[in-house]
Amino acid sequence: METEKQTVEAPVKQKKGFVAPKAIGVILAILLTLFIVIGLVGFNVWRVFFNAPLVKETLTNEVVSTDLVPATLEVFSEWRAQQRVENNESLSGVNEPDIVLLISFMKADEWREIKQLLISDEFVTQIVSDSVDGLYAWIDSDEIWPDVTWNMTLLKERMSGPEGKEAIMIAYHTLPEATEEQIADFEHRLSQVPEGVEVLYNLAQFPEPWYQDQVADYVDALKSANDNIPETFHFSEEFGGDSDAQAANLWAVKGLLRLIRLIAVAGWIVALSLAVLILILNVRSMRTLGKYIGIPLLIGGALALLIALAGQTLVTQVVTGGMLSAISDFARTEIGNSIRRLTSLFFQPLLLQSSILTGLGLLLIVQMAIKKTTKIPAASVPEETATFETDDE
Image (tube, rainbow, N blue to C red; front, side):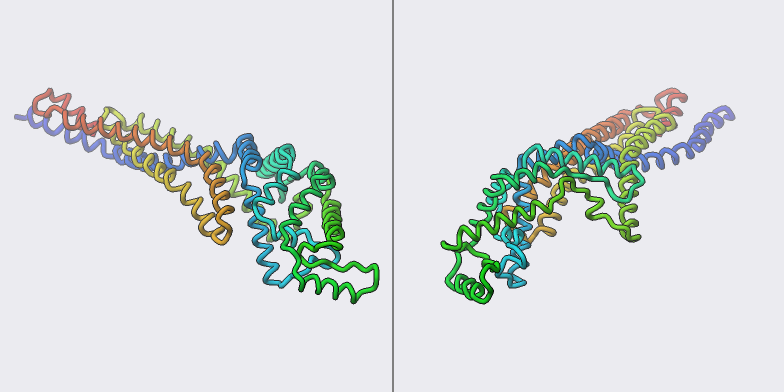
């Protein structure tokens, strides 16, 4: 009888001895679930947003091959037109015809033609490359402002050449034809000044004998604007300031970018390390593999899958439905399409990766359930085997 009593009590004492490892296993499994999500999202942040060659190629293609630029410029035209109406601006400017007022009449079709005339693919490739390189160098530098410099020579050459004059004509023909009241207003103002003093035209296409003179005024205005564009445009010099608040904001942005990059690199490394630690400390069978690895894979993968499924739509709707809700349907559609194309670089791989991990976790859990249902009753097997199965649990 004493021998039988010892046989029964031994497994009970051994089971109590495994309480601490099981508690540690549960904690590690919870951490693994969290870092699976962080690791998947972070890995794709690092793979996309901190990949300078990919960012350059994607942005260059988006500017060159799509209507993103015309759509964005149409938004600017709409804003300037609204401002013109609110300010009751009927003339072109103070000292010369105002190109900004002129383009307030332009739509996406005109902007598309002007983009083809003035903005070469070589110029786009150059400024995107310089901008991306300057931004990424700034993250690791001790400078307050990014050292972003644009060589404007290619744009200036086209603006001062026949392409510039053709662009002016495209913009000019968006103006409405002058009404009799506008012509009378111009003639009245002309009669009030001495001969030789320039009188500005109303915002309309004037017929002969004023047509050629009006067009020449806009061509001269473009030339003046082109002369004011520097050969080399330094963002830090043009927009940089020395205020403490501005410097603090930029340092905060830089610090946040560095933190995001660190998490993006370290997240998946921590997740792998936790998985290895669980395998060493807690996994003894297919049942414990499903319990400590399968469940975190299923939950973490499902959460990441939810982010992948909802994230792209949410980002697009926030931008186009909120921030850009008042713009034209064309501009909103084109900007939305660009956002979807750009964010797909992040969300599409995340969707695939999270689906694989979710499926793997589900498979391990199914194997765990099968193992549990097919387990031979402890009473029908040798005592040593029954004790081992109890330890696995």
